[in-house]
Image (cartoon, rainbow, N blue to C red):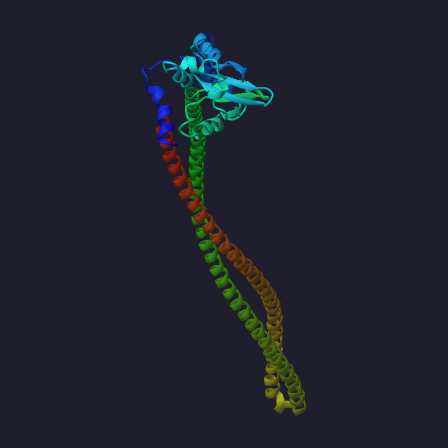
Length: 397
C-alpha cells in the first residue's frame, strides 16, 4: 500500500473524533449506524451496508443544474451522469466541481455548458456484490489523480450508489474488526480444544505411567518366574541323573541276582550229586558188612548234609526268584520314572524358551511404555506452553 493510501486511511480517524458518517443524511446515518452495530455484533461486512445513494442524472445535464443539485443537498459527495444510449457512466466530484466555479467569471463561462465535459469519463465501477476486500484493493490501486474519487456500485447493471474513501476506510476497519474477532474466537476455540487435548494427553501420560509401572512389575515377575523355572529345570536334570543312576544300579542288581541264582543252582546240583554218592557209599558199606559200618555212618551224615544243602539252596533260589521279580519291577518303574522325568524336563525346557520370549516381549513393552510416557509427558508440557501463549494472545484471565 502506498504512503498516500495509508495517510488517507489514517486521516479521518484523527480528525476531532467526529462521527464516521457525519456527511450522510440523518436517515442514512441511522441505517449505517445500525449496519455498523450489525457488523460489530455479527461481523457480516458487505458493500451494501456502506453504499451511499447519490443523484443519477442524464449526461446532457448542464453545469448550472449540477451546481444547483449540489447546493440543494450539501451531503452528497458526487453526482453520476448516465448516458443510456451508450450505456456509459461519468462522475462529477463535489470538490472538483466547486473548484471549477471558484473563479470570478467561472459562472459566466461554464454555467450553460454540458457538465459531462468536466466529469471523469472512466470512473471506477464495481458490482455491489463484489467482496469488500476486492473493492478496497481496486480503490487503493488507483493513481494519485483519481485516488479520492468515489467508487460507483452497480447491481444488475443499474446504479445502486457510491463508496467514498471514508466509506472504504470504515469498511476496511470493519473487515479488520471481523478478522480480529474471528482470530479471538479461533484462539479461544483453539484454547478450549487445546485444553481438552492437554487433559487427554495428561490422562494418556498417567495411563502410560501406570502401564509402565505394570510393565516393570510384569518384567520383574517374568524374570523371577524364569529364574524359578531354571531352578526347576536344574532340579529335573538332577532328578533325571539320579533316576538314570538308580536304573543302572537296579539293572546291575538284577544281573547280580541272576548270577546268585546260577550259583544256587550249581550248589543244588552238587548237593544232588553228593546225595547220590552218599547213597552209593551206604550201599557199598552194607556190602562190606561189619567192616563198613563206620563208613556207612559217615555216608549217612554226608547224605543228610546233601539233603539239607539242597533244601537251603532251593529256599535261597525261591528267595532270589522273589527278589529278582521285585528288582525287575523296580527296574521297570525306574525306567518309566526316568522316561517321565525326561519328558518333563523337555516340557520345562520348552517352557523356559517360552519364558525367554516372554521376557523379551515384556522388556519391549516396558521400553515402548517408557517411550510413550516420555512422549506424552513432553506433549503435555508443550500443550501447556501453547495454552499459555494463547492466553497471552487473547488476554485470558
